Image (cartoon, rainbow, N blue to C red; front, side, top):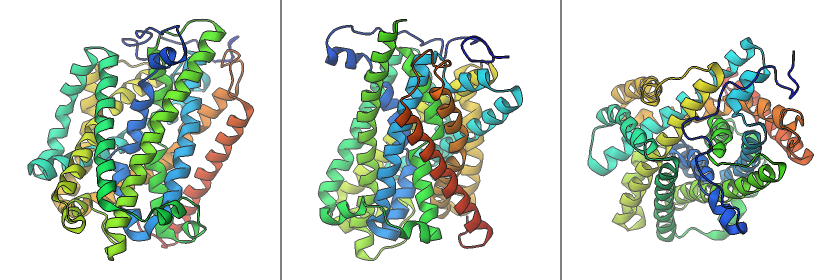
Length: 444
């Protein structure tokens, strides 16, 4: 039986209780209010430029040229719209997506959604484990197997940051994001792509749907860009702001949060597009069509661009990307576990469990196949994320369209319709890929 506000159950507690409503809102002019909300969008944007993106964009650029840039652009537009829904849910309902799913559905449905959410976090963590290990290997010569094990130690960094306030955590993420941006801006200057060809690459082409291999990579890019765990994350961390109780306060928070996330995701678009553009300008145009391994890209960058510094910048950006992504994965793991099953586990324990599950397959692949197996595992992890997307998207769209559940602040109709179209596109592409795998048109 539904409660008066449309939910089946009352909310059991605040999302990320230790940080909830701890950051005050400046009530001054537009810019000062916006600065109060500056941060959550960048924590979300981190997930859109993690090491999984590197593998899919490198493989797509070196194999097919600029054609998959259109997928990067479309994925980013999808991400902007979905993150706007996510933060609206957090502000209007006072619930994160995990809590909302638990309070809206039966225990059986909630359990299934929890399993899919955990699988998405593990797939994300798998990409971060491999990416960080590769970064350590490229910069410091640490063997991949040891690097994979060392990634488990990042729990101490996360605990240190969390213990000093959410604003410091945000500052750490933003600083690493700026570092990644600067590295790629310099790499673009070295690569000197033909910008006319780049712009044409942003125009969608039918060939993507007709080529099973291209569709496989396109879904990998989609899964690496529109990441399900970010929908849980954003609906929670927007609540770290001490938003007032009035309708006006909440509407202003939704506006400011949307501006913050949209600007942050444009940074992510630049970085994702830059990885693919770099792969095309450096490798594809030189006849190197199979540069899918991050290590191969690092090895070839310096000599092919005539700039030894390029390889170092590439490795620094990769390591920064891996470190950044560990922060958001830790937070999301806590949000999902507490929200779905109301089970509170110390963050360091939760982190070690998740990271331990990701380390095992990463370690097996690196031991058995060395560098040659990491790219395929990275791309596969991103395709897995694409399959899991609808299980986060459908509840999100349903909740934000419900005026009662949203306390009179539902999403605009156009945004709801756009989100349903995005959901149908992703489901259709996933079914097409399953068909291609079953018929042997593409191998995973």
